[in-house]
Length: 126
Image (cartoon, rainbow, N blue to C red; front, top):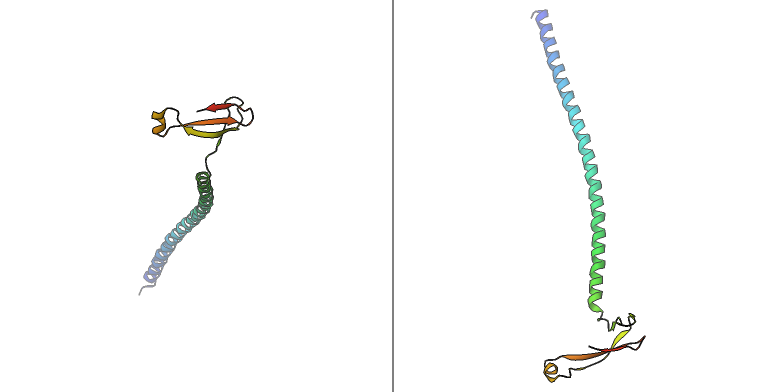
């Protein structure tokens, strides 16, 4: 083989390999950039996920507290103490409950209630 042809072939292979190396280098640089961006995104999403887990835990605690309040509310009997219309103190209590004086209403289950204020002794029949 002619030495010039051999040298030309060798230089041609070198150029091709060098071109492939440059392309490969560019691809590797692009892939590295993509990997760095993906790692940043993973870190951000991991942080967001941790924050959301904390929020969910806090909301679950708050939900349990509200459920407890609701249960406690339903367990406590209604107050037998009302605000007095005269002195506006929460001392207006039911003293007694009697059947309605009108027999028609009494037969239907209606009652009359006597309330008295423990502070000012005001009485009212309802």
